[in-house]
Length: 378
Image 1 (cartoon, rainbow, N blue to C red):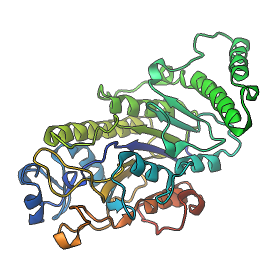
Image 2 (cartoon, helix red, strand yellow):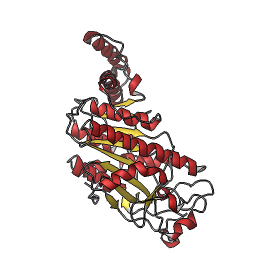
Image 3 (tube, one colour):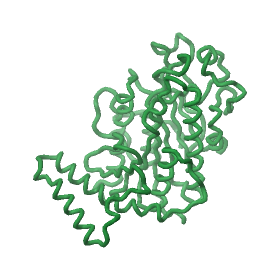
Image 4 (cartoon, rainbow, N blue to C red):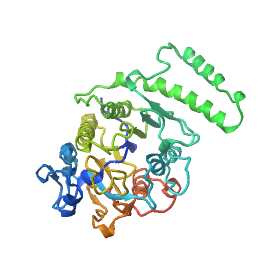
């Protein structure tokens, strides 16, 4: 099967819990790295160099291939003013682009509204995982949220168009605005009905899919496979989102083995994902963003690392101009945030601005909540 979709598609893999950037893109030439990481410092002989200053964690070999191809952008010191060290608050800020107040609209929800203002495609945006990330939330924007694509599809046992329409009608009357007042009940009614329609369509994706590649038998592997299946099914989905298992990157203890396992999983499945898309001639229109809500402290605590500030993000894609973007935050004590934190130097909304303007060809200001300098990685 060969993909016929050519509109730009954004896949997102959120690294939940706060990935330790210092042990992901490692400043191995800086002696202060060893001083701050007496327990968790990666042995120099195991680091995968990407230049004479920085290197990857040893488990990131599969991602090094994209670096060598010039298709991996690395963003250093990513964050925002007055950083929050709360998982929930910081992730909300990344989702809504609202660092100073509680936002209700997601930046990708706004993107989807621009793409499909009349909600004609209930699968324009799809999330794989539990719940619905706030990044995708926007009134009038249907987003399907899928736990497992192989078993998804509430209407799959219903035969025939008439029975399916009857089921949708029953659902609609169960959640009709007569049970409540105002926009909230309208939203519940339309969202539920759209979810049923989306389930009906999405359930057909696995049967349309065949591939020679094999994803790992992990949550990330399953969901990256589901993203590929949905894209290759030709449903016109434009934003495909997933998240690593809840707070998996929150490595306060036992980081050495946990972090190695996490990046083994992510690296292998990102590599498999692009192998899959390339096999189907469908990688040209898909770009993958990987981010985390914050970085971690510079010093280890003997077994792990605690919540920090400036972090690291990645974008992979055929049209990505690979390279290092931003400066590595200083490890000098006088240049740190209070409490032993890396200062951020790049606002995360600069990355979003580039994606919105140069990839989706939209005006970014209303979507990201202001004017931010682009990072020219496309």
